[in-house]
Image (tube, rainbow, N blue to C red; front, side, top):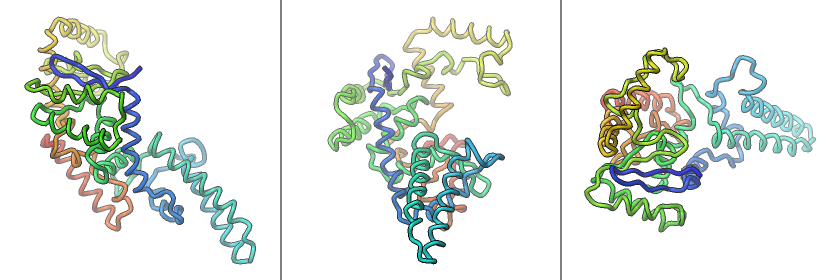
Amino acid sequence: MSSVLWHTRDDETQLHGAERGWCRHLAAGPVAAAWDLHSTSILERLAPIMRLIPEVPDGEYGANYLHNYYRSAVEADRTAMARSRSGDHGHFGKSSRVAREFVTAFDTAMKVNPPQIVIAGHTLYLGNVNMNTALVAGSDPIRLAAKINGWCEAHCWVAEPDRAWMAGVIDAGRKAGLYRSAMGWENVQAMLRTADDGPVVLSYTVTESFPNPFYHPDAPTWPAGVPRDWNALTPKQQQTRRAWESHWYEIDAGEAFDAAMLWLQADRPWAQITPGNLATEAFGPMVTVYDLFADDRDERVARAVALDKDSIATGRTG
């Protein structure tokens, strides 16, 4: 059974893996409201969005299923309107059905495999846009749920001074019924409220552990230009990494944790969760679903991309 693990230097507790899926569900609430897929003019509403989603060259099958559903819905709607003008209203039922099929396909894509979009030359991942929407429109417990779901595998963390604050956010989520009982939240809160115990770091049992042999300032880096595939490494590169891993297992566990924290702070400063950046440290550029429908959409996206590049360059965490 999968779990979201919460680590300190000397302890570990877990949140049930099913609660990670529930966190994703919580974050999806504000996103669904922003997309407004129940709009009576949904084909018109989503027209500018569909123009932003690139089609692969063949344009007919597979990856273009959203465009195919959309074209079918638009054509059915156009036919129904033309027949209506001649007094035949029977095609509106088919038009509604085809439109619902498109909306269902779009909604499923947003939840399961969000596509990329291209705006004014900038490529964005709609999965990130959706999660950013939860950050700007949700409460603190929903924002934290989005960060836990999105970043537990990247080892997001909370520093010691902010641990009590995070425990309070979890309190609010539990009292509101957003965070479910018997999922491990009580143990997480108890860990967060333990005094003088350093940072708390997350990991996911299905992916890389924390600490990790290669989350260390002295670990060999992956060779530049080499695909992230063990078989792509030369025998000498493989031997170097094996030798380091063997050495790492001889390091004291506390020292390994401290070294991994130094690595995280240097490599992923954006993964620190604080009261000041819970709503502002975004998933990629801070672009939301609301921005996609704004009159000044292109300008908003350009500003967000520029700010994101500046944040990466300066190591700012918000």
